[in-house]
Length: 288
Image (cartoon, rainbow, N blue to C red; front, side, top):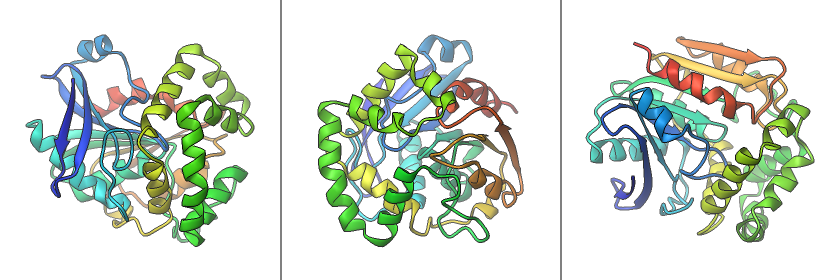
């Protein structure tokens, strides 16, 4: 079921509700760039698990209005507004890649509502003390995040035509990524079903503008607006140790600071292996 809901400040948010509408709720926060059409189990699988997934386009992506200057912490207000509109008091949250810091924000800022949280292949805060933030990171991401920190206007000027080209031919983004993919990630992306889903996801995310992507990058490199160390509820951090887009050191840093964190590191896996890990992580999220 697709609905266009309003945020607290009147912006529109495009929301997708999958699975059993009476099932236990889990918010699924998409990657960067991405949309509500990103990786998710099929509806029948969700029904069998007694689960409903709520995915939505972050501001500036897909059918959601932009929130200029947003921080990672701003996600909590939008998730709360969607939950209120759907009549959901308590829920679990999972985020993958660019969605993972936003999932941690929900855990930190809505402790009375979030039951469990999972962050897959997450970044750590840009100002993480003692972490070499760029260690092990692909050159393209080093370039983008450096620009997001030092020259956000210049980064935006480059991203706008790049997003226009990807919107017309989303395979361009996969071709760009392929140059830096590990063997593990190449195997995941070689699957025709995964590739089709990713192309649809990227095209929808960028169909209106590049600003969801731009604002995500700037938000990751700016103060997040919360301290991960203050998260009290159960948190699962999953990371492939071969990841070059969000290096594994980021999850290791967070695991040392989040009191309730369980960390799962897969030695042979990389970034896109999180797609295969998602179903079993959803099972963990529904444990009592």
